[in-house]
Amino acid sequence: MSSEQQASAQAPVLCATGCGFYGNPATLDMCSVCYRQHCLLNNAAATSTKAVASSAATATVATVAPAPDSCFAPSAVAKGAASSSKNPEPSLAAPANRCASCKKKVGLTGFACRCGATYCGTHRYPEKHACGFDFKGAGRDAIARANPVIKGEKLADKI
Image (cartoon, rainbow, N blue to C red):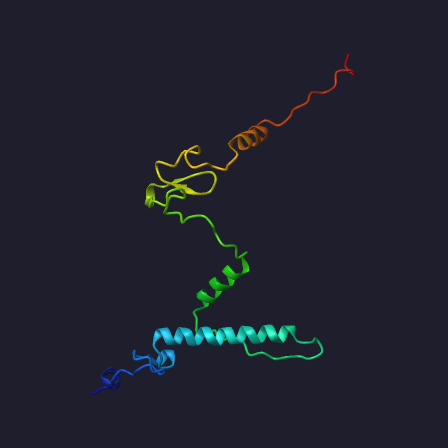
């Protein structure tokens, strides 16, 4: 038997944490769920030690081990950092695939209103969903931008 056949003939290894699933040598002999929890705990511990070190007195210099980046792919870490840098405001609007008024699934046929929500065919008109968008003000602004004020020269000097 070649070495590749021997490796495939080995019995699968159970998870190192004892959860009953099969582990993988690439994930420290843990199953995917236990490995994810392991990585999250390591990252949380590293970030909490960084916070403690940054709040320590400026006279003492604390060294903190960096968070293990081997747990997550670089793209996942970058996405997590990008989302945490934005303002974490909870969105109160209904998902884009449901009507904001009656919560009916709209799929691809949803109508996006200028107030920012998506509505079904019944509630697509502003008077049907109590739209809070100021259509008159938007129209005034559009007209003002399209037609700037033009003043002619004074004729007092010319006459």
